[in-house]
Amino acid sequence: MTARRPVRDFAVLAFASTHDAMTAEQAVAEAGIPGRSIPRPAGMGAGCGIALRLDPGHLESAIAVLARAGIAPSARGFIKDR
Image (cartoon, rainbow, N blue to C red; front, side, top):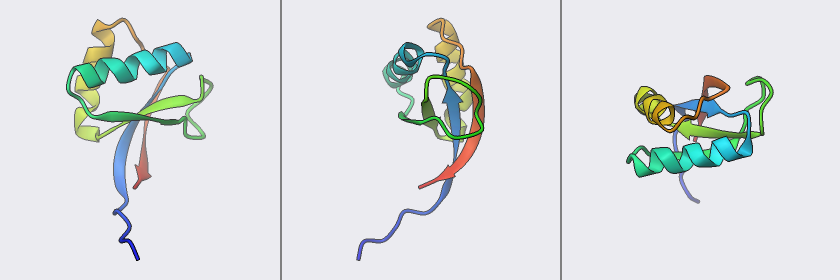
């Protein structure tokens, strides 16, 4: 049996368009910030359905990278995930 990873807190950024979500994922990756695309969690408002999951310690850096790239998240929040 494989051990399950522990549940952790993650920051989540949602976007108004799929283009913004995909561009955001690329921008943070190029800046060396680890993140991954996930389905937009329920309760994060309207949007394209794609969100970017990040370690909470990288949230402010990621937002700064996105601002320089001209991308504004439509919502931000926190989730618990594996």
